[in-house]
Length: 400
Image (cartoon, rainbow, N blue to C red; front, side, top):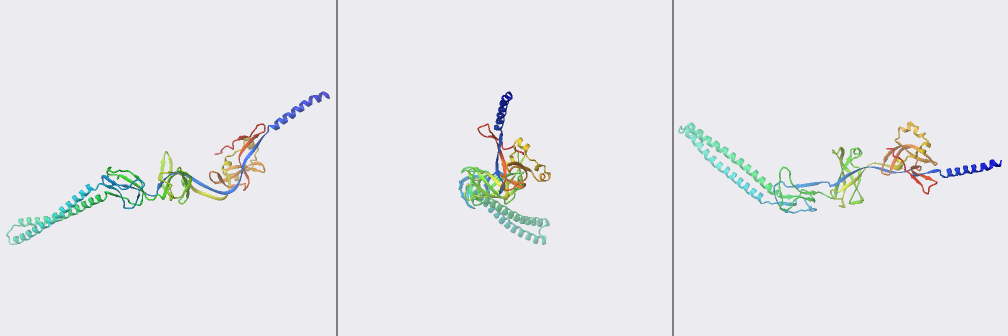
């Protein structure tokens, strides 16, 4: 008996030590959770655009000539009818004088033709009387009559030349007026493309002298919205955007137009969407890049879960021990798009859900076996007793 006792004590001690070792090295899981609550979720479509004035007018020259004076420069405030540039008018003044001289010549030709016509008329009536007395032949009478009728035609020709001369004079005067370049609207000069002494040539394409923006207090953002998102964009929707010059400021506007013409670049199709913006502070300048977010949907007082819970998947061991009864409910699964994991009385449970709209942080829950205040799992931490600190395990694998 003493022999068995001496042999059993070391075996019992070894068993107790092994049990303590295994119990001391048991891993435990710590879940990171967040409570399900209610709130407002807004869905946005993001796009990049360029800030431009609502109306920009390109001022050119209708005549060819030398720029003699400039009355406007960059950032100049101009009014309707104000002279912004002057083309040397001297050559055009000479053209006007030449046209006036041509008109005077044409008028004199009319007077001369009328005088000749009166003389031809008297000769014709005299010849008719002489022919009646058989003093002149029929051939002489016909010759005088022809001269008289030709004189009448000369009057009409001279009168037509007067009309032509008047038209030429009108063109010359118009060209002279066009040497003064006028502003067609009230606005500000945003670009000047000519200098004094430069010759502008008006040919098939009008040369650009100035770009004038009508009003910088009202701007618009030209955004390019992807074809996948354009169906959610509607006129009247609110929009927010930021610019690199003022990264802390948010500017607001409204969608006013969706242009139907597609923009295709490297097989990517986008549509130009215009957003009107109030720029009374004059912070926004033409050409700035705007990072735009257009509000396309909004849900108030709805159940929402953090987006991290949608990406979370437990470790394989936990998945094997999880109750999968809910996932086998085919009737409910047909109406749902995914699932989340919740802690129900300290136990991990998988819940099938039907998602609504989402933003950068939260997603709306349309239908699920959950309620406000429940804890949804967004991550887990693996604690090992033999280690000094916790060993973090990834929050989950994406299921997209």
